[in-house]
Amino acid sequence: MHRPPARRASRTVRLGVERLDARLALSASGLPRVAPNYPADPDFARQWGLNDPADVDIDAPEAWRATTGSAATIVAVIDSGVDVSNPEFKGRLWVNPSASRRGRPSYGWNFVANDGDVRDDYGHGTHVAGILGAANDGRGIVGVDWNARLMILKVLDARGDGEPADAAAAVRFAADHGARVVSASWATDEFSQDLYDAIAYAGLKGVVVVVAAGNESANDDLRPVYPATFDLPNILVVAAVDKSGSLASFSNYGANTVDLAAPGVDVYSTYASRSKYATLSGTSMAVPYVAGVVSLVVGQHPGWSAEQVVAHVKATVRRVASLAGVTTSGGIVDAAQAVGVSGSGPAGDAYVAPAPAARRVSARNVRAAGSRAFRAAASALAARAVPAFRPGMMRAAAV
Ligand SMILES: [Ca+2]
Ligand SMILES: [Ca+2]
Ligand SMILES: [Ca+2]
Image (cartoon, rainbow, N blue to C red; front, side):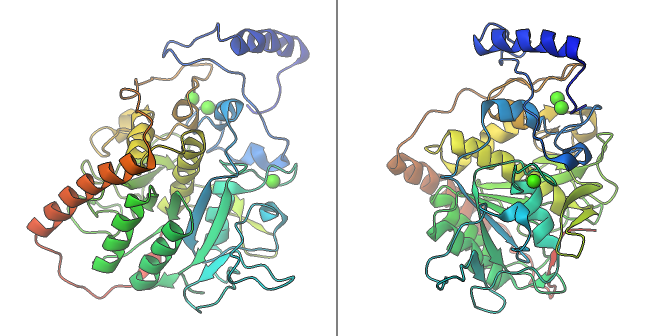
C-alpha cells in the first residue's frame, strides 16, 4: 500500500530508516533496505505499475529514496507528441532553442509536419510521456523520473501511423541534441536500414533506445518486428505484464529478442483528451517504465556507455516464472535494484545478483567500446539475409 501505516507502525518504520541511513540494514541481496519515498500526488494510488500491494511493480518508491533522477538527463519521447497544456508537463520538457520563438517555446520537433509544434493529436504520446515523467507536483500522477527533461519528437500522426524515415531522423536528432535515452513505443514489420543505422549511430553517442516488443501475442524470434529485432547492443526490448505478473495476453515475447517486461495492462496516465487522463494497455505502456528506469540509472552514472546501462538494467530485473524462457533476462524491470537499493517488499523478492560492477569509462572509451560492438553487430546483420521489404506502416503499440 502506498498510504503511510498507522502511527505506531510509522514510528517503527522511522527508526528503521535511521538505521538504513547509517547503512546498517542490508537486505538478503546485499543492497541497502530503504523506506519507500511516496509522492503526494493523489492518483499515485492508481499507478499499480509503480507500487502495488501484490508487488508486481517496479519498486519505484524504494528507488526514489536513492534517486529521483537528474535534470541533466534528456529523454527523447519519439511518439505522437505531448499535450503541452497539461500541468503534469510544466517544467518537465526540454526546450528546442532553434524552433522556439519569443513566448512560444518548442519542446522538440514534429517530423510529420516538419515544424516545432509537438502538440499531440492522437493521445498515445501523452500517455507514454506521463508514465515516464509526469510531474511530482501534488496533483494527478507521477512519472518514473521526476527530474529528467523530456524531448518531444513527433513521428506518429493523428491516426497513430508513422514513417520509418521520420523515426530514423528523430533518433538522430535525439542523439545529436544530448538525449541519452529514447522511448520508442511503436513497431513495424517493414525493415528500414535507415532506422537501423540511426539507432547504431545513437549507440555510439551513449543513447539507450527502449522499444516495444509488439502486441500480436507472437514470438519475435520467429518474425521480424522493427526496431525490436534489430541486433544492436543499445536496444532494450520490452514485453508487457499484467497486475498478477503474467505476460499480457497481447504481448509479444522472444527468448532471444525480447529483453525484459514491465507493467503494460490497465495503465493509468495522462492523455490528450478533455479529462486529461486515460487507462491504456500495450507494450507501448511498458516501454516508458523501462525508459524511466534507464533515465534514473543514466542520471546516477552519466559516464556509462549505452551497453553498460543496458547490461545493468537487465541484470537487476526481478525474475519471475512467467518470463523465464520467453525473455533474455527472465524478469520485470526493477527501479530500486537498478539504482542500488533493495526492492524487496514485505514478502521479499527473488533477487538476482547483478553482473560485476561496471567500470566508469571516459567519453573516449565509450566511443571505442561502442565502435567495436557495433562493427560486430553490423557484420552479423550483413551475414544474415535481410528481410524482404514489405509494405507496412509503423504503428503505435497500444492495444
Ligand atoms: Ca513493490
Ligand atoms: Ca503529478
Ligand atoms: Ca518488490
